[in-house]
Length: 205
Length: 205
DNA sequence: CATATTTTGTACCGTTTCGCATTAAATTCT
DNA sequence: AGAATTTAATGCGAAACGGTACAAAATATG
Image (cartoon, rainbow over the protein chains, first blue to last red):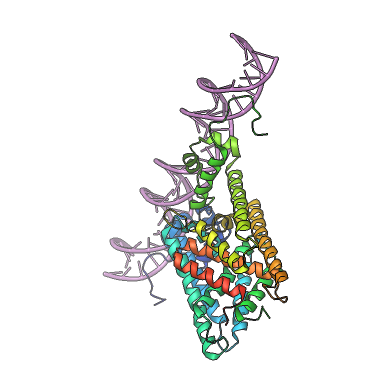
């Protein structure tokens, strides 16, 4: 299903790579401030090619968000390896997040969804939907791990897996915002550490 | 210092009210997608008047952010009334935040800073600076209350006021993002409640 | 009343925007 | 080889963009 030779002139570019380049433009500039010229230059595609492959600017943006979301879910699932302690899992999640968030050129880029999709969410219903679904899926994946932690005794029976998961996500949301606000890696790592401790229950002594 | 009669034609509008209207436009659309026509229509000012009173679009946006930041700090200070228990203080902070975040017309607007300034923060250094300062000031104000809680015995001596404050802020950042993502008031209130419990130390039993 | 000064309204300027129409190129199918 | 089909490249075009020039209006000063 990958080598079905279509008739007609074949593509001269890798759509996936182009989508990655476009995503980077959106990541730095946001959706509204990213022009088709910017996107065209970054992908080395002229506008009609972009248009033919992805549709208009909003469709391209939604594709980029969706790809980012899926990549994020994969990273999350890997970090939440249930053979490791919950504490390590959360630390790995935050470390993986920071590795992505701090990868900016001039200033740290933070999270594509939280950093750029939130701005469009009020007016663009479809962006809001992707954003909402992304956050929910993330919460859900962490919640599964929390349930496991309760079953295994890592967390007390009284713990609320859903809410703990949402609060674990909250720490990550804050890292995303703060990275883009220019906070240093040291500060962000300290917040991540404290978040792990608080959620795993040993910050109070 | 308010009735110094300037010579020349007097203003026919209230600059503060106009700034509020402009802020609302930015709040819904974000900085980049808000056009001068939008702003002009919302404020009932023609573009030259806008330009004369506030400068260019970025200056107007920065003014709106700064006013929002100051309003937020006032609301925060009021919510953190030290004669009330820490738990109540945090609950009041989150309730006040949600009252603002959920006030959208079509979809909830969330936080002006987190919802729109983050998008511009990478490319606009001055926006990033305002955002960073806002987050830090917020953390600092909560941290003061946390220190008080340690002194009064509300929190154990072993508690880390700075990190607890940052985590308390983190919950609010998450509420801001989630409001804009379309989460219901019920979900947001539940997260706020759980956040209070976690930070004040009784979610684990 | 005349002059200086500031604001207001209209209208405009050059640029950039997004999207597409059109034509040339490259491949498959018959 | 020729028809059919898909992509690539150039370039256009209408609209929207941010910002301002200019003249009329409204006030203070002399």
